Length: 444
Image 1 (cartoon, rainbow, N blue to C red):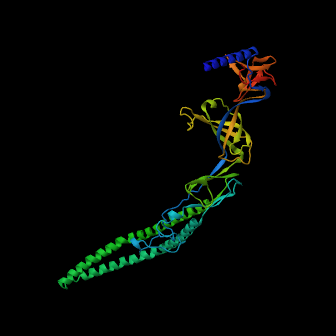
Image 2: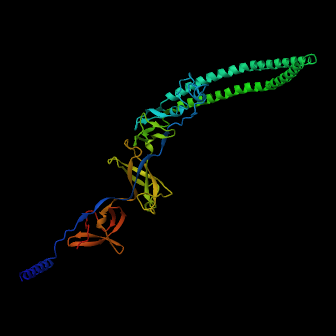
Image 3: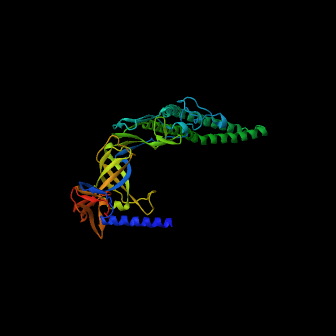
């Protein structure tokens, strides 16, 4: 009974309060407002990407040429002599090349950086930017120089011996002919000698005739053989000379100079299972990029935009570019490239393609270098010095746009004409003037 009476009294109290509020105009409701201002409205598309240099040179490690087998190289175990295990001997002299068969494969063609230009520093065309260790190539050069000297001497000696060898062999032919003639004379005494001696004279004639014929036949071949030996030595000399020229070219490649004016940017390599910038003492592979020379006046932002937004973009549109690493840097830019083909992204659905775009940085800052991430607001439309309201203050019904304008007697629904709309603000052409107070939500 007591609970029922309390419920009835509470209901009567709520009714009296509601009636009183209605009689006095209802409860007080707070409406957020804003005053119209004069300002600028920019409709933009935001893109994100990476800073790069349009004009840059990639510095590649030199491609070292030469035989990896050490053939015809002085001072190397590959220049074999008789003896040793398996008939392989050792060779001294030369430039003191590495010991072991094919040792040059592991040493001569390694590229170890001994000098590097400072990362982020400015260089001019022709300045030294990298130097590789030249000890092994210099040793290789000395070895082949010694080899050439030895082979040239061998060729001269062989050429001088050609005539002597030919004459020596011809003397053997003459001696064999004399032996054959003597055997014929001896054979003529077969009638007056014993039968055994007669048979010996006949055998001597046959043997001496065969020997003479063989030496006579070999006379032309001996000359060809000697000349072939000289030719083989000449080929070895030519090969050594080729290796010498390759080594000289390799030594020239190991000193690298800047191809253009610009800033030095180091590439990254894996060192001890971690990524790091290239530095002195690192070993790089032939043809591997290890440095970039970039023109700081040609910086661009390579970014992507979805296909829908890309259709609204036009060449020459202006942009405002900000760097993630430096919040105080904001530079103007210009849209100078829109890709023709889309590419898929790992962060979007497969059916949503992205279009690559390029924006030119129209102003430079010393801190802007390649590979920095950045974002840009590309201006689609812009209105200057116009009445500006937040988008929350604009309402729309049945295709008509209006605001709630605060007046002396309350809120007035006021139709307006709008212009450029950004993500947060809208330009108002008519219906609202500077200083007018409008509601940010519908009044009750």
